[in-house]
Amino acid sequence: MNKIIVALIPLILLFLLIVFFISNGPVGVLRGYFPPVEKVFMEKVTLEPNLINLDLINDGPDQVTIAQVLVNNVYYKFKMEPSQTLQPLQSGKIIINYPWIRGNTEHITLLTSNGLTFEKDIPVAVETPKVNEQYLTTFALLGVYVGVVPVFLGLLWLPSLRKLSERWHKFLLSLTAGLLVFLGLEAFSEAIELIKKIPAAFDGLGLLIIGFFFSLFTLLAISEAAHKQKKVNKAVFLSYLIALGIGLHNLGEGLAIGSAYAIGELSLGILLVLGFMIHNVTEGLAIVAPVAKLFTNWKSYIKHLLLLGLLAGGPTVIGAWIGGFGYSPTFALIFLAIGIGAIFQVVYELVKYIAKDSLDSLFSATNASGFIIGILILYVTGLVVV
Image (cartoon, rainbow, N blue to C red; front, top):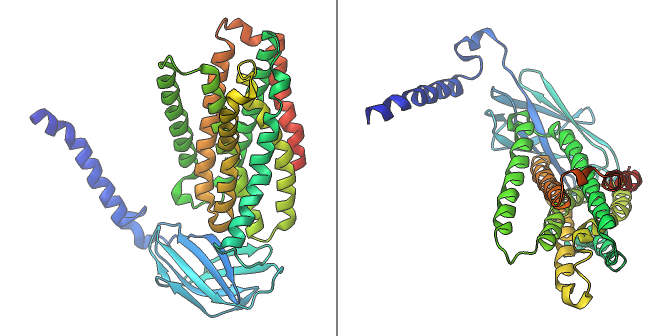
């Protein structure tokens, strides 16, 4: 018992230190010698007729009071909930009575009681979509156009892949690995950009690391458990893993499209739809690659193909709804991190599957060229999105 108490002493002292730090702030007892550190992060803007609603969070270590609000350099009356003073990490909402004009660019400036300013632009003023039948249908159709239909079109390559030799089957699997590595690195790049768009107090890099490894090791554990079940076909299981990884990635694509439409950037939204349509057809090819020699009868495996297509393409619809009605860079970052972890877990499974006979065969000219071609395919189709 005494040994347990002794072992707990460092933890108890650490807890007391943390309590002291939180109660006194980063500058502690020397607070009187330093100016207050104010930092306001504007998370989200929603527009209603003659109203601008601004969600914000106190992203600094000191309390902050919003004294004035300017729209296009003109002072306007505003209401703030729960009050004009926010404690560290406390969220608030500002309601501004302002007759915004559809299609205009609006510039918002917040002025604190200590004279600091924080600014945010609304690139294209348009009423924020509300959850109703019209918008639910609109965003669902966008997800279907971008994710579901292109993935199912890609699955139609299955008949042409059935008679491949073992060498070219591994080429196709290597090409799939190239596709997935490109998707994973592309999503990682997007995640790094998103870190700049979330409150510093949330530690975006930490969220990215946690989401990545949580997804990676969870799927590794599931995969290990599945492989111990003799009834599980490894090729079919691998196809489902690929579909899952692609589905989580497509969730991010849906978020991007839904948010583009929600903030009125219709031209960007249309380009994203067209680009992702072309981009995602290749994903169907990646999904059926492991089962190309197994699925020789459409009727026997139509159920699997339907589930694979929905698993890979369906999340695009969910992403479009989230992006259209309640886009949050923080949640977008978490989704991306989970997707990246899933994709690289699938790449690991693919590598094991390709090299099941010999590790040296992994680096053959056929497999290496397949991997590089897979990367090039997504690079070229990705240029359409850009």
